[in-house]
Length: 58
Image (cartoon, rainbow, N blue to C red; front, side, top):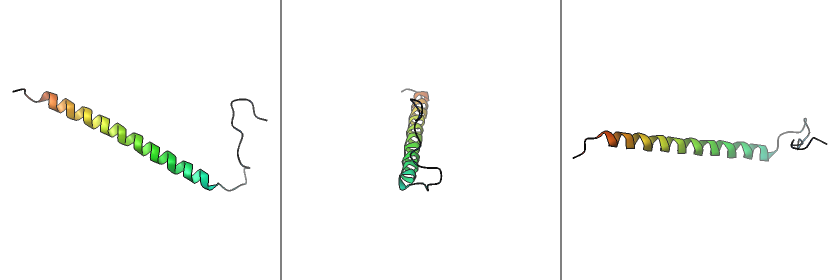
């Protein structure tokens, strides 16, 4: 029995990966892409705001 706080392996070392392992990988990749898109939008918005602030005021 593993010590508290450590996850026990769900399969044996010789077992082939399950379909859920592939789904986890895809899910993680989609989440990472969404986070990168959010960062890009934030940086783009801040850059646009900065450029607009530099324009001369009428």
